[in-house]
Length: 469
View (cartoon, rainbow, N blue to C red):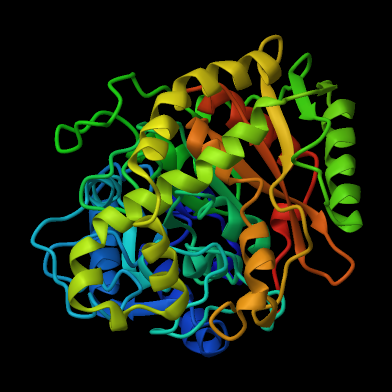
């Protein structure tokens, strides 16, 4: 353990529980790495150094007298700057909320605290979580630690970049159109979006009532399983949270995918995909097949309608959430964000109602096409190679719009459908940037999704590779 920052979340927590490492040592290692490298990456918004060290000292003293630590005790974390903690500023990546101090703490933060996670502060993000690339005109763009000229993915940019750079073991992101899975794939880490309603959204900045999700960016599928087990479950403060019991996700990680049936859509998810992405994706499928999974090509004509409706929901609901500020202070938004929000006001009400009404039938249709007789759907997380920050800067050049929107083409449908989906690293493109494998399952089948992702990581080492900052 010469470099404690190489430990994943579960490795760090388990080493602490066994008495092999002190929580304070883990926190100090993270703080030192942030101090040395974040000037390049720009992942951190607020660093609560002293509070983190105090929390670590408390944990070390408790363990010394035999107190059984929580499942995340000792693990340093930071979170996207949209998870409210009472008395702490939460900017939501914006100028409008640069001094916003909530009075209550998000349920997911409370659950992480109770499990012993050490919160070190907040992270850069796209303004109001409203773009898939991670650009931010107020805090400055976050940079991909694999190559600083390239996108991190958004909107959980600091979460993906910080986990990849080994600044901390885990981070909360949010996912409305791919904002956990995109930074995961572009930065070469693991990101999980659970079933819609699986995790409470109480105390979390809203973007879209119908599509917002809370979830982790971590190093491994095992990390994601333990993290989800802590934060999932019914919350009285969030009436939309599901009452389904929370299983032991980590216990489901058997490493066995023998006989698991995986569907691959013949078109759509691979339409226009770059050759290095297809090569890495097909190699990942071959790895799963060699481990005993069955891979079958299927057709999914419903995806065209899903893609069309997906574009409506967050646009309209985001416009409604921001209506007051858009009337009172539209100049405080970045140009691209105000343009997206204004567009939401032009969508006819009947189209929005149609989108909501068609959601259930399209989910049933997609499940019939791709999950009847199958356990999972596999896709590349991103169809293209990782783009540069310049190539996706639509404030600098509106002609970049198509490349900007293409980033989330493969992730958005699973938000509209509400299905549990994970992205794991599966290789690198010809420029040395990560490629991601996306696996989706039936509603509340997170255990299956996690088992397949973990089995893949047990026979590959892409998730172990770290950028040389």
